[in-house]
Image (cartoon, rainbow, N blue to C red):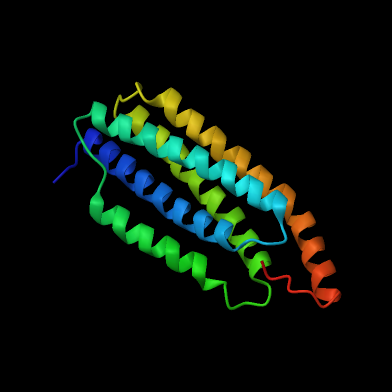
Length: 169
């Protein structure tokens, strides 16, 4: 049984929408806990706002196709996001592990948007291309911000830890 390319596109839109829910959960839990890393806090807060916009653009794309996001996927990936965010909390170097995970997750989202754009093109769904490209560009910018913060966050972590201060978050 073959699947219509429109159905593949709708599924990819739903998956990406749920992925953005997971991203929100991860970032919101981290922001709640961050104490010593204001540059990372600022980057995460800005990207939380962007992520709400990305979800809105995905909602609009789905709505234009008379479709909605998947409540089941949203619930599951939201739960997974919360668990991922909490996964590093017992670690003495929680901030470093979160920074690595954030870098990886942003690149995961980049791949998801690039794939979504290709699926949309294959399905002849070009009406959403500009909005999806905007989301892709935001993900690329956040990936670069996180990458640029690896050194400063690591140096601050070492400085705080060496001085005996609590540096995990």
